[in-house]
Image (tube, rainbow, N blue to C red):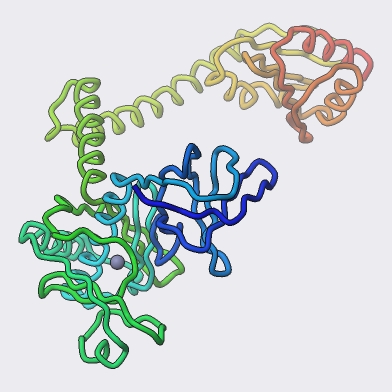
Length: 370
Ligand SMILES: [Zn+2]
C-alpha cells in the first residue's frame, strides 16, 4: 500500500481535484501513454494530470486535504506497460524492415497508434513487421531500464534521443532496440503474448497511422472478431472460408434484382398510366396514386405531360405533388399557411412530410381556388 499527501482539494463545477506535490499515480498523456487509475482513501481516481509541477487527481468524491493510503490499479498498469513495450518493438521493427520512422505515438483505452513517415505502407510490409515483432515477443527478451547521462546516451545508438539535459532513462529490449523513454514497460517481452496490427490510415497527407493491439487486448480483439465471423457464417449458412465469396455473390444478386425491380416498376407505371382514372378538381386533372414508391417514381414520366395534370403520390411518410402545369411552390406555401407541415418544394415537385390524408383533402381545396 502506497501513501499520498494531498495538499489541497479544489471543487470546480462537477469535479473534485486533489492536488499533490508528489504522487505514485502516473499522469495521463505523459510520454503519450495513459495514466494510472485507482483509489486515494475512499475516493476513486478518474483522471490524473500534471500541471506546473503538481499532480492533479480527479476524484469521484470529496476528500479533506491530508495523508491517505492509495491503491493503484495494477492490471491497468500492466496493460499500459504491455501496449507501450509493444510500441517500442513495432517502431523498431518498422525501422529495421522498411526504414520507416515513428513520428508519433498515441495510446488509447482500447487501441493504440503509431504514425510512420510514409503516406502508405504495403500489406506485405505490415505482415513482415508483425512477424518480426512477434518473433521478439516469443524470444522472451529482457527489457532493461537504466539511467545514463547525455554523453553516455550519445554512444548508445538510441532510436530516439529526448530533449532533456539531466539523466536520460533508457529502455533496452535485448539486442533488438534501445531508446529513451519514461513510461511503463514489461520486464520481459514474453509477457506481451501477441502484437497485432489491426488497421492503417493515411494522415496529414504524408504519414501512415498504424493501429495495433497487444497482450490481452489482442486476445479480446481476436475473440470478438472470431465471434463475429461465426455469427455471420451461421446467418449466411456458409463456412468462414466461403464467407467472402458468399457476401460478394449476395451483393451481386441484390444489385441484379434491384435493377430488374426498376425495370418492372417502370413497366408497371406505364401500364397503370394507361388505365388510371383522374378526378377533375377546378381546372386540373388530379391523379391520386397510393401504392409502392418504386412505381410512383415512374408515374410522372407517363402522366405529367397530359394537359393540366396534377399527380399526387401518397407514401407512408409523405405526399408528393408533381406537376408541369402550375408552380408547386405556390401550393406548398398555401398548404403551409393552413396546416402545420414540413417538407420542401421546387417548381415541378413539392414534398410534404406527413402521413395524414387531411393533406390530400387540403391540396384539393387549394387546387379549386387556383
Ligand atoms: Zn516506452
